Length: 228
Image 1 (cartoon, helix red, strand yellow):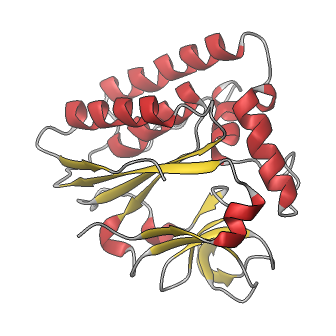
Image 2 (cartoon, one colour):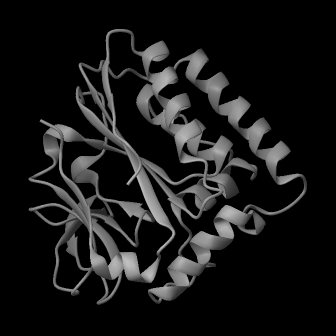
């Protein structure tokens, strides 16, 4: 059954231009990074470089809109970057893009090439529906620090994704909690593409992601949900 995704009225008021596409994928077989998934990441960096044409990632119009949304809920965009800007910045640095596993490589490639925040969640670890809200500040965010599991809390007013168990992603899409991350045991996943404004290009990005998932994981069953 599709997981329910809701965006609170408070978030809608904060960022009227926000919209998202969800792709549910079933019967996945995740695997370590391959030469093909690594080549996909290399090509994503090339596409990003062409798109930016000498600009920094934060100067791209889509990233400008995301920075405005982050500023609106009290975050400092130079310190707390949305996931697409942070990944693009790393892609253009000496460190380059990490190779993690096939699923993560595929969605990271789309995020970098198209400058769209894009995350993957393990569907079987999501408790109830997922909600995008402005936090009260008391919600639990389970993360890892110095190798140990710790419980943190978002700031009051911060935009977070959460489920019935707690926060799954801090500051909109800045930091995902480890509980719902995709790993080598994941067989069902939710991919969430997030956009600001009309120039986000979510539909094309969603179509490309679906095509790549079918290419890299033959037999996967996909459910592409309409933009919301």
